[in-house]
Image (cartoon, rainbow, N blue to C red; front, side, top):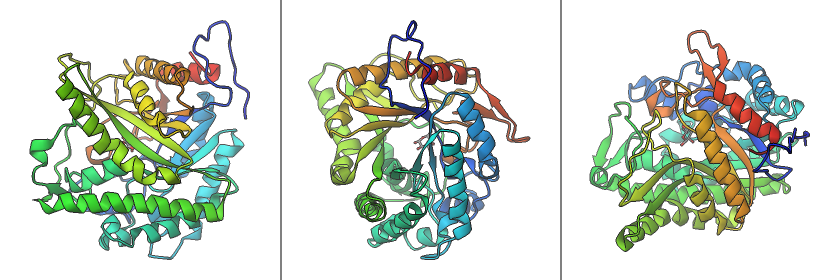
Length: 416
Ligand code: FCB
């Protein structure tokens, strides 16, 4: 564990000594050159923007990790691309897995602890074309892939998340119809309560059936996590296997009816799924971006995603997850802020709220800002700027934003 540079005169909110600080990223959003996924196919069909060469992180990871290191990070959350590793069903590509060995090693060499997500939204084309997670044999297929990856990366990494934000994935694919496979539940327009910003013009199939498929997909995702957990443990018993859960904070004013709606929504979005997988989680990753307060008349400043600026909401999310009695990681939290005039303040308030949650018993072990680099923001393309580091997509030049130094100070002081 690298030594933290603790300045005891100024740190009022000190974090536990072995706390991890870093940023998060995901392969499809930064690597570039991935052509055999459902997202690449959707881009070909004009339904989502092209990812193209992205940040060319596939070739520039060493340079990017040097930057992260210089910014005081001692850990990094990354993902590996399923479609690179298993380009055809059951056929694994050694070159791809050797590449990820080098990537994980590059982190280790810099004294940065790797956390690896096995699947972050994009599916290999062969799997998507055969129905993906709609299929009831998806858990076995996913577990076989998970075991392969961990058996080759186990010397470099002990922290694995099986999947990223299963409920976001299923909701966008089968309720909202904005992500592959573009199925939209006909009543969604009426029920819509989350505000996720303007979406690229997706062409979706609309009907009542997507709702039932959604339920099946969610169940299969939970089964896939559980199967992958067992498969990973067979390969590496000493691993820490987690679920990365996107939590929307539903809360309410004093009105009991609003409070009831908030409770039901928290159950629907978070607890229903967590209960299906918690038996097979060594830890939980929390991704926090959005809150919805029922009966609220307050207006909020907005991020470039049009999401309320409400970093303190992460406290309630952590309190919500505390009940599962597992170590918690902030696996993602951050904002799109092209002007970089709110990011520093946002991060500081968010970290303060995490500290507060730790004081009140949440066992939080690490914090990963989303994201290290600007990147491909799914159906919204490259316009939204989440990075601590700005990317010029013409030249691929990296420029550290001022807010990255505010976060650096937090990382190096291990507190605020
Ligand atoms: C999360 C995703 C991540 C990124 C951020 C902004 O839901 O996990 O890939 O798109 O949102």
